[in-house]
Length: 519
Image 1 (tube, rainbow, N blue to C red):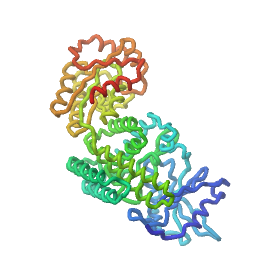
Image 2 (image 1 turned 135 degrees about the vertical axis):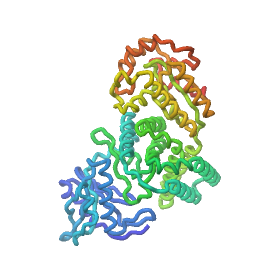
Image 3 (image 1 turned 90 degrees about the horizontal axis):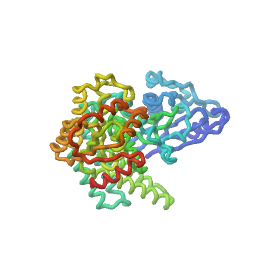
Image 4 (image 1 turned 90 degrees about the vertical axis):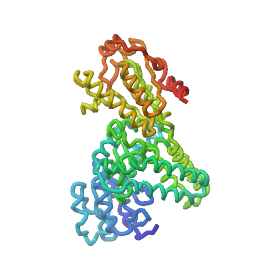
């Protein structure tokens, strides 16, 4: 690490209350930036510094990266990023020059600087830091609805991001190798455990070799965020907004979309929010349909945890206070254990939850999924997907014709088979009222050599009717009339285990009992 310039005069200028309508701003310092936050605006100054992975050491580089940051973040946070601006030398100090807004930034990158320019800054609208998602998580205010919106926002961003060409397999192998080399040198980690991690990573890389090669051809390696964790997401008007993406390194941002999203999964898991992470992952996959890449998630999440582990190790080495340093070393060990957990995935199995509409299938599936690290395939969502229909809008009646239903079930079963074949557990959520549909899902497990369990959910007629009537913002189009027709049908012999989903019990109660039987 080398420092290249004294930026004190610039910081003094940006901290002047006169720039902030008379209010005293506050300064946030990171290893790479200074951020001066006032009541209305924030100014981000890139440190005049050079690391092995980042170079802000010259004014032209800082200009380049200020412009790049404002332009790239306008993809997801146009309401936050105003643009970039020069800091100009003035009598006895500095002043903020004219702001180049995000629409004009591309043409500004190569423009000649004013000779009075002494620095460049990113100019942003200030927002309430209490709305950062990590702050919400600390206050236990990170709701399932916010995480659902985050999954969809991330999916939209990734599907719109520009694909890139690179040898993603080689990049992944190199990152894992570098991670392990640095963990080898960490004296706060158990050497035998690190050696075991080497073996587990080798096994994962070998298992995923072909899939890693395929991701570029499939268009799944894109210009992503690169640093997608809870601290880099805020709520604006009640919706999650992704900001502060990586602008200084294509190696860090041109990555597999699932590797980008894996940072969020790991961050939630670190906070003991695994059920939320599983639900968010399932929501993301329903939106992106990227089920072919799910087998990479254990490796990708482990990589993210390894990187946080080695950063904690390096930080501990720089700390003077022994207690603070030890706390940071414990953080490193926690991240290491998290990475080890990802590298030892649970054996794949296939579970089906069937029963009349309103019997609690989706509720039970969501309760079972976290303990099994399972992906949920919902027939209701797949039907909307095949029609390219809004999930919460009713489909026309022809969408429920027998031939369409057969296609829906076949898509669901094919995806389940693909997942368990790749070593990932799957839960199929559908009515399964026709005996052939139950036989087909069982056969998928048999052909893949995976354990199968079928659950048949039941509830009193009046409860079924009330549940479907009370639904809102749900993929199911079932009504009380649909339930009445279902109950009149001959479902054939039901061999699956019967489960009563009673309103008096939370879904965790039957799920806990069922999970105990699966051990």
